[in-house]
Image: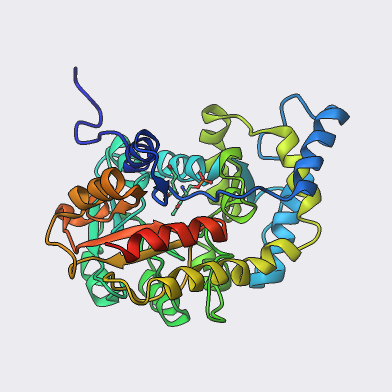
Length: 378
Ligand code: PMP
Ligand code: GLN
């Protein structure tokens, strides 16, 4: 068969979650909370179904949800998006990302991607005939060298994808990073895809530097968000994207034939729930406590780390323990020690192996303690 994606196999998140379940291991691999969503939010979904929100939603999303997303973006980042024309509700950020790439990447276009990269970007680019131009970031801080990025820009560069806070490393872009990016893109037609699904999971008093804060970026950007990360509901697959009208027109041309619309009762519930910002404003503190607990328990272990500035992922170095490759070590940890993680080499350029694994700490205190107990014994 003439595969459109000959290099692609099953995503590492599926591979590791399956292995964890086969071996009855604590699953800190795929990123998802093991605690529930707010009962109030769940009640709102039931209410929405009872009220009859069971047929197709408007194609770009429920107006009340788009309005509250625009309002939230404005209050957090001082940026005005028109809910009618510049906000679209999607089936998770994954669908937004895929649809953005489908709508804009032509065969032969170049797309700059920072490595390690979340694994959905590249297959989407390849499907549409784009060429991936990788920029490798290095452990332990994964800072961006903007000179390096500048040297990769050509007349064929159609898009740059950034992700802050960053999966899988937990790093965040600073205000200075965003200003440098803004300067670099000035006077170009390059589209920025700013994947900000972890916007509310950022620690140590830092502020999330959304592309929405920078006028020179707003005019060329798609920003993606995910209610799964924010409301502990990854299984709902609810997200959204923001972009200036001219870009959003093209996005919606594809979106309407890609999914048409997304879940109506969920949109109703989210619109109501978002009327109070308490939940998302408390997330930094909520997740920082979990990160700090996990790391305080690991301080005497043989794993090395620098605390993740954002996301619910912590990178742990294991070179003091073994010189096995990260895939082999992650498999062995799952099978023999009953704890599953994600090897980072699968997201790197040429599978570069820095001997680090990613652990998800979006877990109850009890799970974090049991996981740390195992890791301390290795
Ligand atoms: N981008 C990144 C960086 C992610 O980690 C995820 C979570 N899988 C997504 C996008 C997709 O989000 P969603 O689950 O809303 O599709
Ligand atoms: N974003 C999640 C993670 O990084 C996984 C989502 C998925 O399985 N596609 O673990």
